[in-house]
Length: 381
Image (tube, rainbow, N blue to C red; front, side, top):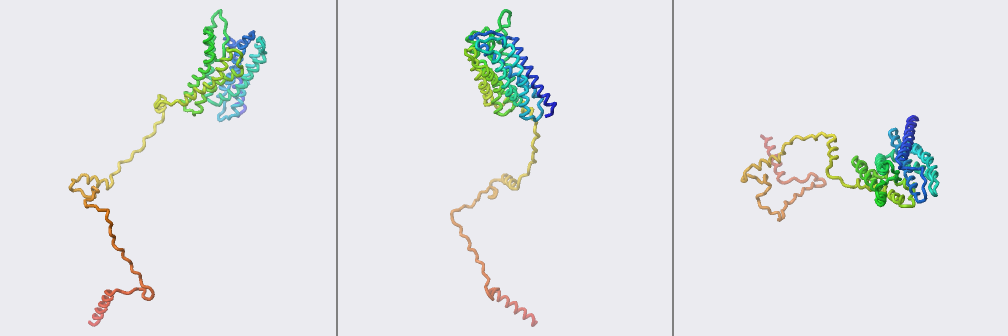
């Protein structure tokens, strides 16, 4: 790979990842989704843990964004080594999240926790996991679909959760990653949404992506794994943040553990469900397929002599039909009596020794004598 091409490739991966990470953090700060300048006592410590899940997820999605941008700069026929280097560059760019989160965390006070160290470790782990996510985005088209679909859905859920609290005089609530958390919902309903939001979201995305992959004619294994990548980032983010100590964090933690499996289940269902005999897509593809020229037709061959004789015999009256026309013998058939065969003549063997020519028959000798007598009588005349 040329130096200029590699420089552009790595520069795009690093720059776009850094921009994506900073943009997501700025948007989350502005909407109140993430707040790192708080004072939390021990009973509110799980609110801090929920913030860590967001930070880890931002780092991974930033690396994915850098890889998606760099994919268009990949040279043709690039191997695994080029994609791995590009993924590392994207992860380095996503590493901008580490200082951007550690700096405001200096003003955070959480009982029994060192906020700066903990949030720095979580952001760094998110960056490390982003290497694998970026490599998947560079290598597989269905992985890019899943990252984009689930990422957009997570942001929509977050905006819907904070939208009612943006009215004047209301405090912005703490929003958990992948959980529908609007302020107007009762506590019991919010607990149920925390348990089912991520699995349902992953299942729906898995079915949609699996069906899209199936319509494109991709291999069965690719279709079955189409719903894995996006939900897997949610699972990794909660694994990095930890389960917490109360239901506020424990419930979404276990929901995230099932998200990746739910996404795979949806895409597997899309892969194994039988299609209808005729679909609109099949008809459209059949119409767009190139028309093959018709096969050449053979000229009519004349009837054979046997067929002509059979046709002629079919026109004769019944009393004029011959056995050769009908294949029926009028003579009685008695095929159960044995047939006596004529004796086979035995050829005469020539004589041996001096009489090799054999003895002549008496009739031949008499005829020769008569011939000699006639010849003699002719001489006298």
